[in-house]
Amino acid sequence: MKPQPQSNILIRYAPPPVIAGALAMLCWAMSIVIVRDVAGTVPPAAMSFLRCVLALCLLYPICRRALHAEMPLMLKHWKIIGFQGVLLFIGGNGMLFVGLQFTTAINGALINSAEPVTIVAVAWVMFRDRLTLIQWAGVFISMVGVIYLVGRGNLSVLLSLDLNIGDVFIFISIVSWAFYAVLMRKVPPELDRLNVVFGILVAGAIVVFPFWIAENIFYKATPLIWETLWTTCFNAVFASILALFWWNHTVEGLGPGRASLFIHLIPVYTVILAVWLLGERLFMFHAIGIGLIAIGIFLTTVLRTKRENAA
Image 1 (cartoon, helix red, strand yellow):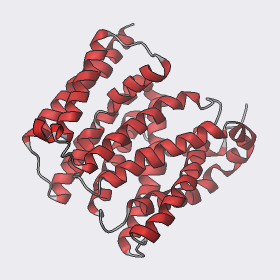
Image 2: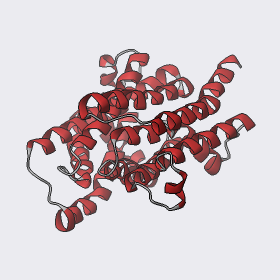
Image 3: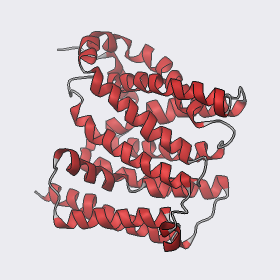
């Protein structure tokens, strides 16, 4: 029998796929709330860079043997792995962390709830994945919901471009995340998934490093305070390592179609946590926006998954 890579030892401690998926979404929702809570105290580039460094330090002992065994293959495909790091930590998490400096955690989560639909649209743009008329309708309705949220339910805000810059950054974030998700199909499937995470974290640390230096010089020096320590630890352990591992475990156990439905838990968790912990308020435009996004999600993902399972 061929021995399993060293990193696969983690599977022994993984919960069932359904629980793993719910836990992964909870980690990412808590990350949104935490980043919003320390906005203005811990700057965004510091959070991105330090989480990458700490996550790498924690991951290396776990996947060291598998990493060394697959290093030639990883170096052969360094371009796609590196590009994924750019998309994730500059466009995805980077823009999300910057956006949460200016907008609420609730707004951030509700705009992020359009992620599954955005992935469907990007997959069509890049690889011409086939979409039915109903799925196109879902994409359109969800995008209307996002625009409604960004405009805070006021047409004059959109027409005058008097937008919350944080919401704009978060919209850029979900587009970048969508490209990241779609391009994962370009990563060789024979690579150990935890090794891929390690490579993406290395790329993320490299590309974020100049922004962290510039942030220290021109914006705000990284404060050596308790908030910096605990937010870095949480994002490294829970949002970077465990959430990704649990998510991969869910995808492997349930398949990508059923696993993608767990993404819809992020806004649910975030709204509850933001109201409870941050004292944020819900408004009518939140309800209307999330309603439109939910309809679009149903048409583009839930309905598609039901048909795929029936087939």
